[in-house]
View 1 (spheres, rainbow, N blue to C red):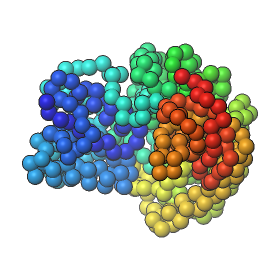
View 2: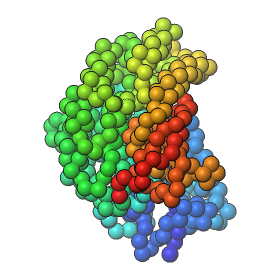
View 3: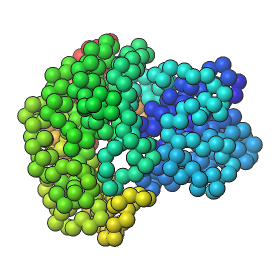
View 4: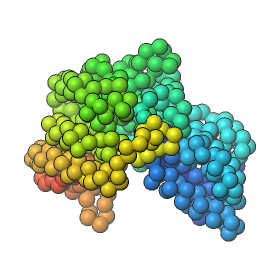
Length: 431
């Protein structure tokens, strides 16, 4: 049997694509290996979101073709966003690649490797077995001027609700305890299929899936976020009281230039409603610093808003010019030094906010899902409902004979800016 490895670059949405590819490939003709150096075929699933991600994807392609040139690999397949967007340029610059495919071109991989079609949901998880990502839609129809995703992944296409439910049930049957819903824009879910946005209905239906303890919703686009979504999450037994609400900015002029279809006042009202309905809410957001023409006063307005709202989780990104985007063509670009300096100021403030919130957790007990065991420190590493995997805080705690992938009651006795420390106070509370 030929050995195939898949190298994944970029976000969780790309990770799901790679898991689908692995599910397609694994069978009688091919076996999967995690070691690219031990492969007959390497599939590089690329990211094209920002410049750093593009460079990382190019490096991965060049590393794979170098193995091919040395005779250690037979074929190199390149898929994903970068491949779809820059196919002609890549074919010219890296002719050693056997075939370039776009994102979600599963049929292209099936045809090239002469494979039969397989059920869409029977993917091979590459996350720890107790949590998984579930993509509810593909592409994006929003006109944000800084973003090239619609050019790479196309317009918004929802996955039919019955397929989402089947996939969630399949994941539950595999032992998954937490499902993280992802999309380019979760709030628009269903509009193309059902004529209206039905994320609240999806939440209510997923709440009935047996075996899943936590659901988590990511990438809710602020302009289309409704009170109905808040109420559905608030009333759910399984959806964590955690909302990913990427603002990018709060100054009205900048929001208009970004084409975010929302104002600062509307943002404030939506957040106020969320917190009034769910006092225990963890609110995550992201912001962009150094957007073209951003003044110091406009940046300070965003900084003041962060100070006022005290987001539980926040990420900041220095603006990155994307090819063929409206923002990329704007004349008044800000220097990289100033963009990064402003990003650092945001994160300094958020570090203070996060530390104060974490200190307030000392002495309290939380249900924690164990993700791993750190042999060096002899601590288990897990998360509360307040934390999504890989991007948020972690809980380090002691205990004996605990199992990764299970829930335990943990008492917090110390805190740093982005982590909590504690000890198990109760045996396993869920199976």
